[in-house]
Image (tube, rainbow, N blue to C red; front, side, top):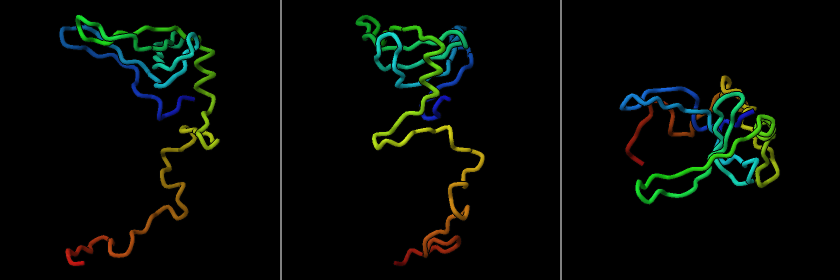
Length: 127
C-alpha cells in the first residue's frame, strides 16, 4: 500500500532534447533506507529492483547535485509501504482508505449549504 501523499512521480519514458531517453520511476519521498537508516527518496525501478537515493554533495565544477544509491530488498520495501504510519497524536495515517470516486461520502447529507448571503445569484457590493 503506497500512501498517495508520498508518491511524487510515476513510471514512464520520454525523449529529452538531444535524443537521450529519460525514464521517470515511481518514487516515494522520506523513505527510511534499509542499509544506512537515513531518509531518502525510494525509486521503484522494476518489480525486482528498488533503491533509495541520498543527496551526497554539490559538484564544484558543474554545480550539479550528486547522489548515492542504496539497493533495497523487495520484502523490506513492501513491508514499509504496507505498514500504516502514525501521526504525532497516535492516529494512523492511511491515505489509501479514501474512496476517491465517492468524494462526498464523508458528508452527512452529501451537500453543503452556503452560509446566508452567499446563495447563488445573490451579489451585492453594499454591506
